[in-house]
Length: 350
Image (tube, rainbow, N blue to C red; front, side, top):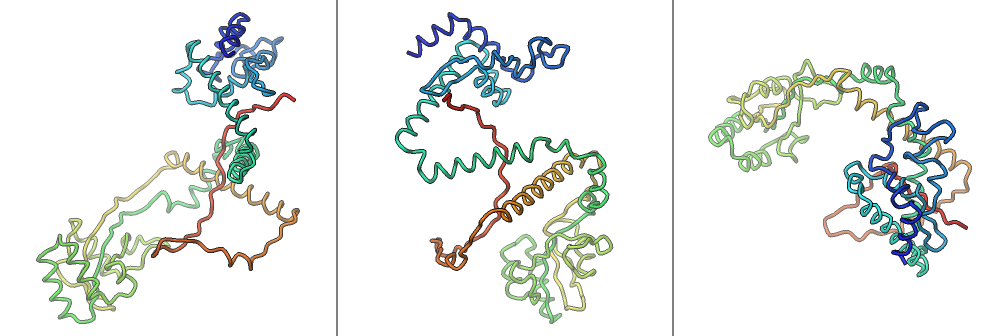
């Protein structure tokens, strides 16, 4: 049957003409004077096809028609590397055959009732949401963000694009100087022994904020360059950490602060970072677009919730129990907004 179909297609010129005119560079056809690749009396083209060409039926599976436009859309949805694989007539016939097999299996699955399964319905809803989000909120894309908006964000968030040199250090805080001196001699004798440092930090560190992480102070800048949200580290410890030259090195003497006596170990270093407006513009544009999209989606959700009859029985939510491996704890995360997804238009011809 499939060979007979292709014999008819070849005889009519569709397989070698219309289908093969759907170039692997779909969407990259040379444009005519009207900018669409069509003469004025032909009308606009899509993927190099007129409306009449796109509507031509290549195959019919039950009551579902697969048109030239369907094949063109499917090819255009592939990456350029994939499209180059379909330059020959044989490979494009293979592509159409894949679409036919897809439709045959889909119809058989529906006949057997698989379309009513909860997981199938859920996946269908996810596809609907993704397509709706893409069409409603992502038609313009990041390019819709103006240069003025990018510049305004850059100027009001300069700390994101200009960060000073930072170091990461760990410390062990003592109340007693003699005890601190004894431990200092021990770690200086084996500065690269991380297990020794952890054991001593766990045993002696009196700093409640860092005891559980073996004295880790995380990354911090010099005191005079400290930004909002940076760890609060005593200036004396900051100075000592920046003075250590080698990562893994330990301060050669005790550092005295109002809290007591510190042994300081350098564990990391970050160079200063300065990004110009030009360097940061793409990431800013993408971020502003995402924020704009999420705000628009949330506004729509608020509107829909206000207009819809949404009822909640939160008390029954307490009956939901999760079976977790021993030692694990549940983690609640906020799902990301659905991403755009190209959905082929294969509507039944009823």
